[in-house]
Length: 80
Image (cartoon, rainbow, N blue to C red; front, side, top):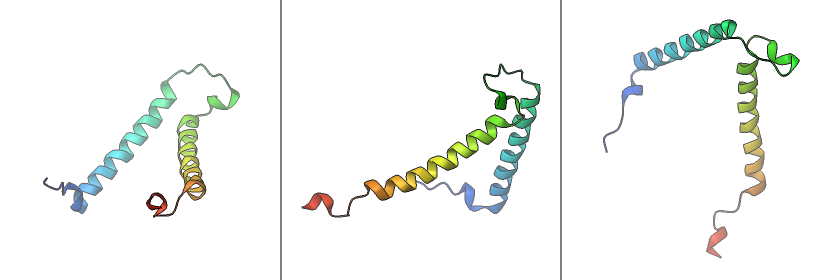
């Protein structure tokens, strides 16, 4: 199978990052014009859902690292 070398060129990586940043700004600006029905007081703040999603993602990464230490078995665990 042929390797995809599109990300080897720094110019393509720069374009991709620029696209992600522009789409992030557009989505954040869309949050200003969308009317939400808030269930909790803190949901009315601008950008709450983005910040909540980011914090949740980071928390999942740290929880997975801790769980890895708990459930990890030795390399030859099934060879016994």
